[in-house]
Each structure stands twice: as C-alpha cells, then as structure tokens.
Figure (tube, rainbow, N blue to C red):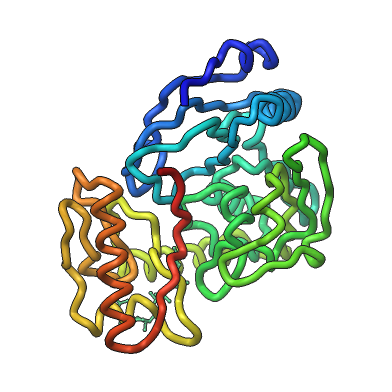
Length: 301
Ligand code: EPU
C-alpha cells in the first residue's frame, strides 16, 4: 500500500513522529519481521485521536505496537499505520498513596522499580517481563503465578473512534493471556494498587524472581514463551520431553534452556520461526493429541 503521510502530518502536532516504510524487526525482542507502511509515535492524546480519525476516514488499518516483546511480525511487514505509545507523554508513572497511575507506554520494569521505591508490594512479578503496561494489559501478562489484572484498579481505554472510556479492573473480562476488551479498545492508562511493604523485602522478592528466571529462561532474542500452556501442563516441558530443544530452522532455534522459547541466533527471519512453530505443533499433536496454541501475537503478512 502506498500511503501519503502528508495528510496525516497535517492532522498532528509537530511533536508527534511519523516514519514511512519503517523497519519493525528491531522494535521487537525477537528481532524479525518486515516494515510498516507508516509508523507513528503520537505525542499526546489529541494526536492519537487525530490519527485514529484520519485512518478511519482513509480506510487505513491501524495496528498498535507495544514494546514488541510478545510479538512475531511476519516478513512481509504490516500494511497501514502502526502506532506506538512509546512517547514520554504515554510513559509516565505517578505514585499517590497506594496507587500507581501509569501510561500504557510505561515499561513494566520501571513500574516494578517505582513500586519498590514507594514501598508498595504486589508488582514484583513484573520485574523481568520486557514489555510495557499496554501490552501487559492486552495479554493479561503473568509470571510467578500472578497476573497483571490482579492489581489493576482502573483502566482508561480509547475506542477506534477516539472516545475515552474508564473501566473498573474487577469488571474487565480477562483470561489466561487475554483481555477481549483490548482487542478492540486501545489501553491508554492504568491504575495499579500496591500493598504497603518494606522496600528491602520487595527487593528480596524481586531478586528471587530474577534468579529463578535467569536459571530457567534464555537471555538471547526471543518473544518469551511461544505457546500457551495447555491445561495443567507446561508446554516447555512437553517440548523438552520430545527432545526438541536445540532444533533449528535457519537461524531460529528452540532454546536449549527452556523448550517454550524460540530464540533468534542472529539472522533469523519470521519464516524460520513460523516453520519451527509448525514443527513443534505437529510433533506435540502426534505424540500427545494436544493442540498447542501460539501465545505470541502473530501480525503482518
Ligand atoms: N520444564 C522442563 N523443561 C523445559 C521447560 C520447563 O522440564 O524446557 C519444567 C520446569 O522444570 C517446571 C515446569 O516445566 O517444572 C514449568 O516450567 P516454568 O516454571 O518455566 O514455567 P512455564 O509454565 O514453562 C510459565 C509462563 C512464563 C513465566 C513462567 C514463570 C506460560 C506459557 N509461561 O512458564 O511466561 O515466566 O511460568 O512464572 O504461561 C511468557 O508468557 O512469555 C512467559 C515467559
């Protein structure tokens, strides 16, 4: 699709950044995938609203990009407009009493650290998740048997017409690794509720989580766990028991440390990763009659 960025630029303030034909692989932790026709970092809510209205008017599809930590972008890239809320405006974290108000672009590591410094516990499990608040809400991200929405008091979303909505966290439907509301709406802000505690106790919990993660998960480029765990079974364990660790397609490899991670050895393309996903799904199906569902969001063409 050849898109004219001039009419979009005219709707936005100068502070918003637009790029044409932007390479997306480097914006993901797996580091594969093609280009976006247009890539926008809006610098305000008004600019985000203007971009959504422009895209509706011109029939341009919109894809939201978080920190790309749970994302597999295909080699043909993403048609239309890709929007990232990584501008400072969307990345603020403010603490008041036991509440942390965060923009969707705020990094989870930063949120966990801010919470620790404020003496608020309950968000330690976010320390090692390389995503942002918007992505974590969208996926109801979890680790150490805790889930993002466990601690959400309130979220603010924007619908595709640019209208804002506020929801109580307890009223939002969430599941293991999904939040149906955020398939349509865009998360703008969330209020997390912490519990008063001692920063040094919180530090110990975070260090413990971080040590467990270092021992069981690879540090190489990956999108985290590739598959959802089927009921009561670890997908990584299933893959491990089938002897698939170390299996390679091109430069993509099933991690030798954790069976549910596909790592990029350096020069992988999305097609390598897709072939490995299919290979794993076929082997698990034929050995156990279990259909492994991909957890990572696959986007693009
Ligand atoms: N195991 C193996 N071999 C492997 C991997 C795991 O035997 O190759 C065994 C482990 O020894 C353990 C069990 O399987 O006994 C479970 O493993 P682990 O604790 O690593 O948990 P997981 O179920 O594989 C889940 C989440 C992770 C999260 C960890 C820690 C999913 C799909 N994965 O992994 O989340 O970090 O628990 O809480 O729910 C992610 O979603 O991207 C992710 C990394």
